[in-house]
Length: 359
Picture (cartoon, rainbow, N blue to C red):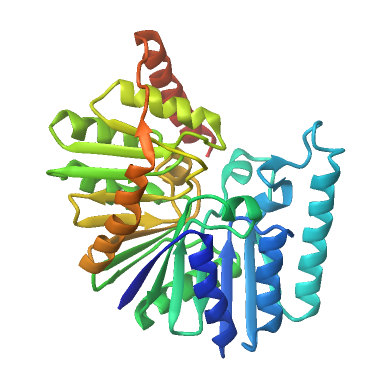
């Protein structure tokens, strides 16, 4: 098995474009967001020129209502000419793909129940023939491509078979929970219902850490912070990298409050948004994939979660993500009053209770 750590959209797209061009059987692409901008158009062009007879594109219904991180139907955006143009171009691109024989479907249509509203398919997954697969955090939109992010390219027939099966299950409208154990790689397909079972493994790994935990993610929340805080208090060196320029400001404040309650070393990534998701435990175990270490992934999103012990991949992640990203991050200002900390805890308990009742 060979795993390549691809940091940034350019590295990811360079490898994927070559794989799509050389595919002879199938190109299966699943993304959270597909937008009719320059990046979406590049993917569409690659689909249209591919020689593989089977070409399928899956995107979550989220991308029908949110473009460029903006809700299309808010009063402020209803008359936004740029947003309306991008919506038209996205529709035109999808129509063009379908007319050329590319299958296009959207997961998780919105409904009127809390679960139909909140449950999103957050996977980013690509399967090329029977020889390569990609998992990670990058979507096909300009704003996402501009962020700091990561994908893993995996060459292994067994892994590809596992991920192809998951793609086809989602394509047929079924969200399945599955686990695959490979040499140095453990994969979890999360169905949005039983996620806590798989994440129990992650929480146990945090609890068993002896020396260090490095986490990079933009949206870390309960219950992960509680375990990280406990680990820091028993002497584990816990470092968190999260963006100073977060596209969801709430999470930046959350990170500061949580770190103020603990011995966690919070670092704020500088210059641009980091959307990268990775956790390195004791320099031996890497947790990556599409999942953020947040409550939505923990409870209701469909995700791909990878737990990697392959030494080469762990070393590559350390060299290509941990070292440079810490160098590009400054210490966070983590001061919070007792009232603010207590209110944060109440918010998390209320959220957990609401999810338990409503979903």
